Length: 76
Image 1 (tube, rainbow, N blue to C red):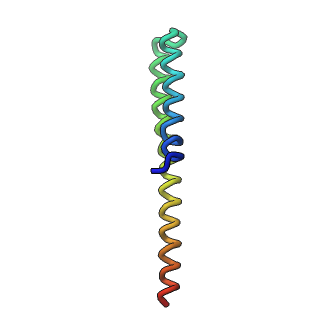
Image 2: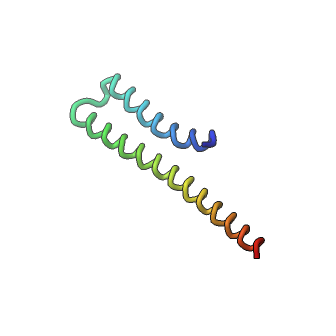
């Protein structure tokens, strides 16, 4: 994996959870709001990671298809 992709995958969840940890430690959020915000944090982080990896996977497959087409044209 490229370093750029790793940063795009790791950074957003890290920022989300750092904010949630700080808010929890400072007792800004507690009780049910804490549970709801942590669950939302997990959902949002998973969606962001899935979006980045899906986009990367799609671009990689597209490049492979283009390379196969070029090879097919050269062989003809």
